[in-house]
Picture: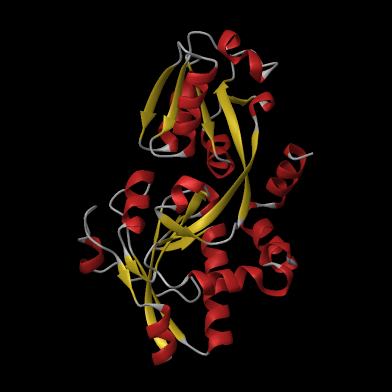
Length: 285
C-alpha cells in the first residue's frame, strides 16, 4: 500500500480500547519537515478492509492521495503508522479511540457527518454521499410506502449497529410512528445482515458501503427502495485537539473540490467497481 508504513508491531497490537492513540501535530511536522501520524479504521466493506497484510478500499486510496498532496505541496515527509483495532467491526470502539486520541490521528471509515458528532470529533470534508438501504429477508413483501412501515412491518424487529446513525434512526422511528417497534442493537453491520438473511422477523438499515458487502455475502436479502434515505455524507474523523483539519480541508477543496475531480471518480470506480457507480446513479435518479 503506497505511502503507508505498516507497523503492526507489539506496541500497536497491545493497544486496548482505553489506550490513547497519538501522532505529531501539523505545526511540529511542518516545522521539522517530517512527522509521524497514526491512522485507525473500522471495517467498512469496500470502503476499507484488510487485503492480506495491507489496507485497501476507497478510504485508503483517498488517504494515499492526501499523503501525496501533503508531501509534495508542503515539502514534508510523513510516516504513517497503522493502528490495528482490537475489534475492527466495532464502530463504537473505533469512534472512541479517535475521540480520545491526541494530535495527528485519523479515523478512516464510513462515518456519517452529524452536528452531534461535530461536538466530539473533527471531520474532513465529505468524501462520499451516502444512501442508507432498508433490508429484509427476500420473503418479506415489498414495502410500498415508507409511511406505512408500522403496519407493513408489524411484528418485526429492527436490528441495527450500535453507536451508528442507524441506531438513532431506529429510535426516532419508534418515537414518531412505530411505538411497538422492538429494536435490537449489535456490534457489527455483519450481524445485522446475517440476521436478516436468516429470518423474516428482522429488518435493518445499512450504509451503502455495508450494503455492498451484504449483497455479496447474503443471498436471501432484499432492498426496499421505498425506504432509501439520502442526504448523509461520510467523512474521515480526527480528535478535537488536532490541528490537521485545515490541511485535510485544503486537500479536499483544491482545484474546485477533490470529489468533483476526474481523479476522484476514477478512484471510486476502481475501488468499488463500475457496476457500483451505476447502481448509485440509479438509486439517486
